[in-house]
Length: 183
Image 1 (cartoon, rainbow, N blue to C red):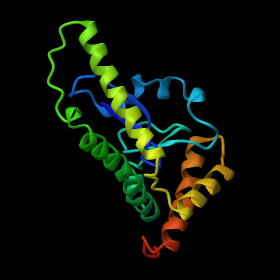
Image 2 (tube, helix red, strand yellow):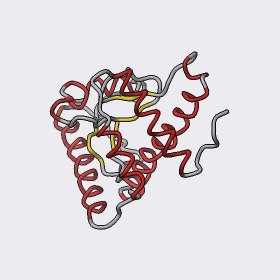
Image 3 (cartoon, rainbow, N blue to C red):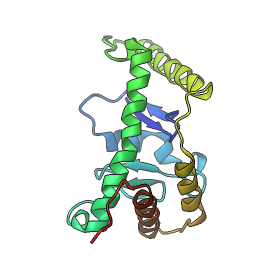
């Protein structure tokens, strides 16, 4: 199962049905989120991913070596990893609310069984989002401000956009004391 959540830990997309040995980036490429980004993303919206994913305007991965070894790219990767922890927390909350999702041990012998399992996961995701909307909001004002700044600085080129995003991320995290000034 591949889950994409927003900064409020609401699930905005998920994919069920790939085997456990399928790489996350391969699962992402099967999602409608990847295939039809214009239907899911507004200008300046994106997902944060690890370095295994490809860079697009809507998918911002961590820098790979050797670029990851530059101090500002290392700092950006650190901030990106901290942000991606939210996704892990979102999945943890989802699985703790509905323990049946922890280990869905079903033999899938026909299409109908698979459809039932997908419907079950979708129902759990929808209920998760309903609870989040009822008062479990996680955004802080500075994170909202940083996101607005990023949207204001939108550029058409993915490489340039990541550089702009890195600048905003480093500036905000330096101001908040998360990062020490880079020498």
